[in-house]
Amino acid sequence: MGFEVSVVAIIFFISAVLMGTFSYTTLSSSSEIVGDASAEQYQMQHIRLQTDIKIEDTIPDSFTGNYNLTVVLSNTGSETLGFDELNVLVDGNLQSYTYTDVAATWTPAETRNLTVTGLSGLGIHRVKVVTENGVSAYASYLV
Image (cartoon, helix red, strand yellow):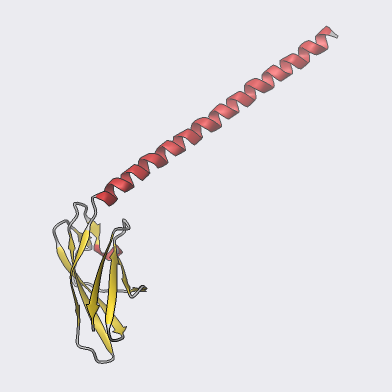
């Protein structure tokens, strides 16, 4: 009876050591993943705090049923942005836009124009421009 108890005790001990090893490995890798995600979140917040844009002017062309809207934007932050990665919403609807500049990078203190074509409707409208970082600017215009 003493030998059987010793064998069972050794089996339980080896099982406990293996379970502890697997648990430590799992917890260690999970902690590493959380640490990496936290560092990435901090970096994204830092970039977002350094990003700012301003709508300088909104210029609708003459109304003949449909009109085009030119939006004059300034990068007032300290981050270089992708001008081709902006989202433009007019009255809450996502719109495609064109721009005439060759370079897609938009450096700080630079002013650029974008044009939204094929808009319709008379009255006051609202335009919103959102950067790839989620920073936005609003303006209203009258047609």
